Amino acid sequence: MLSVLRVHLPSDIPIVGCELAPYVLIRHPDKTVSTEDVSESLPIEGYFLRYKWYRIQSDKKVAICSVHPSEQATLQCLGCVKAKIPVAKSYHCTPKCFSDAWQHHRVLHERAAITTIIIITTTIYNNTSMQAVVNGTTPLYPAAVTQRNGGETWFEVGRSKTYTPTADDIGHVLKFECVVVDSETKLPVGQANTILTSRVIPAPSPSPRRLISVTNADVAGHLDSSSGTFTVLSYNVLCDTYATSDLYGYCPSWALSWPYRRQNLLREIVGYLADIVCLQEVQSDHFEEFFAPELDKHGYQALFKRRTTEVYNGSNQTIDGCATFFRRDRFSHVKKYEVEFNKAAQSLTDALVPNAQKKTALNRLVKDNVALIVVLEAKFSNQGGDNLGKRQLVCVANTHVNVQHDLKDVKLWQVHTLLKGLEKIAASADIPMLVCGDFNSVPGSAPHALLAIGKVDPMHQDLAVDPLGILRPATKLTHTLPLVSAYSSFARIGYEQQKKRVDPNTNEPLFTNCTRDFIGTLDYIFYSADSLTVESLLELLDEDSLRKDTALPSPEWSSDHIALLAEFRCKPRTRR
Image (tube, rainbow, N blue to C red; front, side):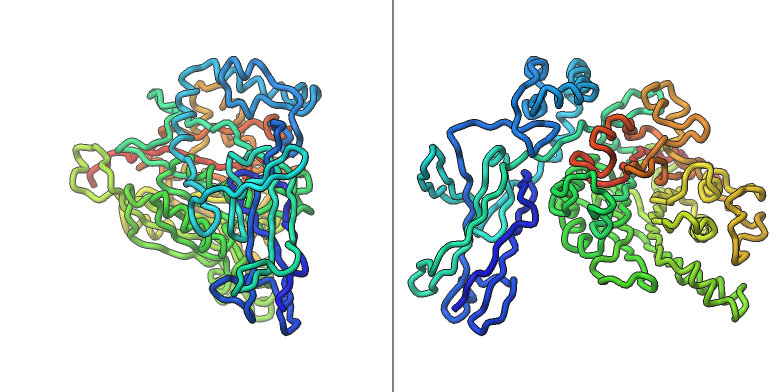
């Protein structure tokens, strides 16, 4: 007969909006063991599995600490109540918790005092409300109630194997029940297997990042592009394969789990309302099963380039790549180019490296990195009198350069290869360029210099690492694209708070990647300054606000990188 051997949850801390998927191990009548579901429509020898979820509602009201969501609150900030700040942010578990958090908590009070900011942030996040959660085979059904001793009531909340906690569940324990049922009698056979979770916690909600104008126009906080401008987001979302407790032990396990991170990332990405979205470290199966279908619901068309697999030895489903999305109501797809640096390495070694050294050269150059280049046509008007009737094209490159610190020559060669490919596209069409991604290169490095200045100083220290001679002569390390880093615009405005978050020596953000062991800038959005102007930028985060959770990722921010976003306007074209 069918029997259940074991039932458990990957995480016992349930979070609002994050699906709970129990692991159920069953033994078949033939003694084989599996985790496959046995539904009522496909019973095995007359038996199937029935699932139910219950919310245990106690007579006692429970509040959750806003800083440590797995802890019960013991005090409330009355200043938050008076300022009408969301009540969930007012609770703390201990006086020390409140004292330690005050430096960051008082920012909520300061922001609440500025009425316009409250209005802006409310508007942004109301626009990104997630779709209603459906738990079970039917969207709605009367809650089954069972009395239990001790002043607790069990409400049935779900009838499927998985369950997604809702706001109604916050502060309550959930119970999962799995039982073998006779197909004919519809009666349970044997004892039910049950699990109790800890109390459901709300999903942490960081204060929304505002868009800061870098022109004379006052558009701070406005994230919806006007007819003549468009926004571009670049974000390394941290592939689940790399999100391990060994690397990020300071992040709570529930906040590091993919079911939680994917919902938090989606909330963040959708909240920015970007017209073009460039993501790096997107796992192949997550692109197909999550990012593409979820962003499609919000009007985005998706394109993906998976990393090559000559070095990678894992599953093709878990290998990551670059994903580019664009809003269908703002752009249409014209052309796609895929750059495989492995192929470029093969061509380079065939042309320049003696046969005896080819294997060594390929071992150094072949790292599976890729770039995705997309040409889009704008559906909105540029509002220029000379441009009426002309197509407005935009070329968007999205890449993730090799991460290994000691392979400085490989990083520079990959960036140079990408730029030479973009030069060819630029030569064939009068087209603005956007170059986005995680370049794994800090400001001042040779790859950054090549991107930002168009050349590399022959005496640059990075050129000392060139065992294959692929960077010689240094005079060839140039390009003609008029690229400028979008975030360097912060250095030119009088917005002091953001200026403090920019390195005055490089005009780049102080960091875009913040872990326990490293903090620095690796991510950029470059644009062609002859055809585009920067209108506004997404505000940068300050290190202190992130260090309260040690580093990234954290319960609030679900990647070890921060998102970058810039709003651009196409310049009127000059006649040639």
